[in-house]
Length: 260
Ligand SMILES: O=C(O)CCC(=O)C(=O)O
Image 1 (cartoon, rainbow, N blue to C red):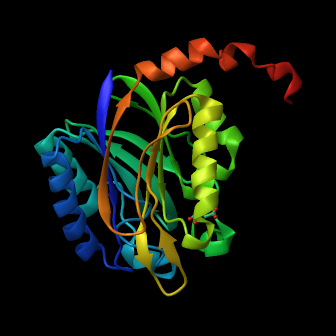
Image 2: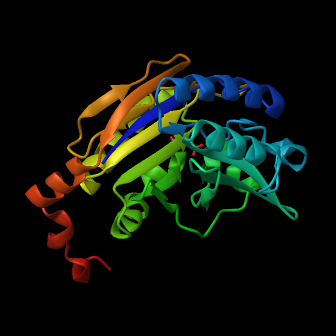
């Protein structure tokens, strides 16, 4: 089974959800009209890291951004993914969601590993769920930015059967080499596709690195972005995952008895 992915490598206006929703809507419509079946937005694409204003900016799970994604995904018959500032009572989360081509929410994952360098732990709560979901019947998983530094977390999702790892990020430019190397490693060690979207542009504290990427299960780069705004397109052929997992059967050869 093949899926056409469109990665929206966009700039994010700091603390301005309305402007970001308008900007992303145009990009989603462009990506859909160019044949994308799954469209990936960055981490916190409606707010950026305006964490100290999350009491004003974060939304409940049926807030305006969720309504928009529901409408756009069903209108264009595409799956749309990304992370959004979530409010539940007086708690805030960085939450990955997926809306399928019928406008149904198929994933809700609250970032598990909070990133101290950007003060996430001062403003947010971490989640306890896993990010597994189905993409057109294929098991997949979603994680957020800093999560990719925890290979055991990715492996947990792969042991649940995932064939693709979707990553949404606001990854700073000075560590963009880590971003690339970690993503390529996650693809090789899990023999899965990695489809990763990073924002571009700057806020007062950081410049973000772009270099959104699709990596195949052999570790080859299918497509990679620059440091500027763009939409990247690439095809994901899930039969490659089965072929590589048969050729080098790491999931059969694991020795979990040694790992604890
Ligand atoms: O791990 C890193 O270097 C970047 C992580 C990050 O920016 C984030 O989780 O938002």
